[in-house]
Length: 168
Image 1 (cartoon, rainbow, N blue to C red):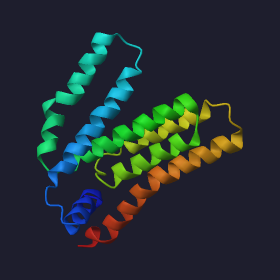
Image 2: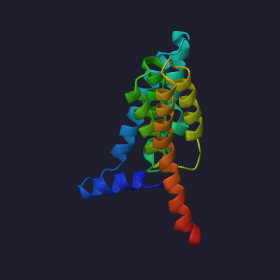
Image 3: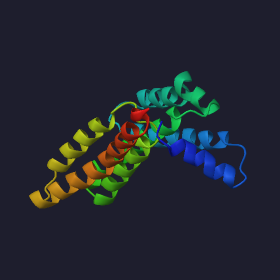
């Protein structure tokens, strides 16, 4: 696995913090907060919104991740953060939200890179960028920034894996 959760553990242990599972509770809380922010903007009935939020918060596959120090919950939280900021970008067309989405996707890639979900985010971001009224130069620049920030970490990890573990 990529080093993100190991680095978080190492930094906290080096600072004398021994209750590492608190971090996973924090990831879970952020995940629920972001899901609330995403679900509340959906154009669906209130009962369905409550149901979706309840499922997000209390589904055993997600909730059980708070009890184990695996990469699943941090990766999911970073992916949902990337989605949240990508949706914010679609509302405001502000470069800051686009960069934050790409950075959260980078953190997700540095947490768990088994699934190339970031390609879906990349395609969604490019679609959202292309549908704006920006100039062609700005659209190209925005797409390149998002692509570089989100894809570069995956490429670096793949190079590292192939040059180290791949040679064993």
